[in-house]
Length: 353
Image (cartoon, rainbow, N blue to C red; front, side, top):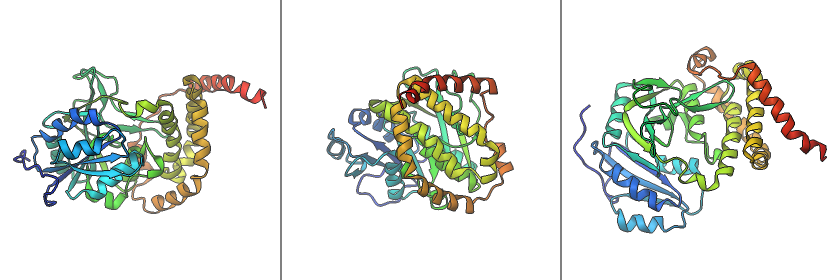
């Protein structure tokens, strides 16, 4: 595939672009001033740009309409969350592909072209993600796609590795990171949209897991380079979002694990959830974590209903999933030590009862 001549569509143009690039933002007016020029200067030009504003109160919508008239804008009336904002963008997209981007991303000029080429070369892939580097320390990886472990732990391939040492070859990954990735729009019609009950964090891992269950793959393309500022939006409410991250890991297990895999790996899942509680004790956010877990109880019946639909439509075997899931990193001794520390941290709470 050759880079196509620039044909960026303005906000009133007919929907003929091959790619819809969706940027989600919340009170990120200053971030967009850095991000949008790198999006609009992509060498692959057959795309339209769309910003989904998630209830900002910093004048973002008015500023976009005045400063960036070539960008389509969708304004959520209130803060609906990351998953809901991603869905608004996907639903408004017209192209064959949908690029999903955070507002705190800087793109190299060839980012979009490389990801389009990746999906053209791999028709079995639902999405492709690129080389996401630390904005402030550009020699370090932040992500090269996402992995999943049967314990329920997920994370970024290559995080903290140095450029040129690791993650330099195109490979299959478990799922993309929706902070900067390209999706095949037809896959959303098949797999469904992001789960809005997640609000924020791991909604992309959940979607990637569901895509895997439906028989799709995901790709990592190192020629697509982007830089992430990291936590520039969610960092304002770090405790809440960390608690959401740990709660949502349980939702992924409840929804997406086939029954035989869940039974086989239940001890690992339980250990990981307890380790997450230990981490919240250590980080001083145990109250926020427990609050999110308590709130998730009312969502459990809905998650189980979603599970039934997901598992009924599963197209891959558990053995095939095993080949996609990353090995565990915690030895039994390490898990035991974490659980003992958790017990010590929780003991005062029980003594006060």
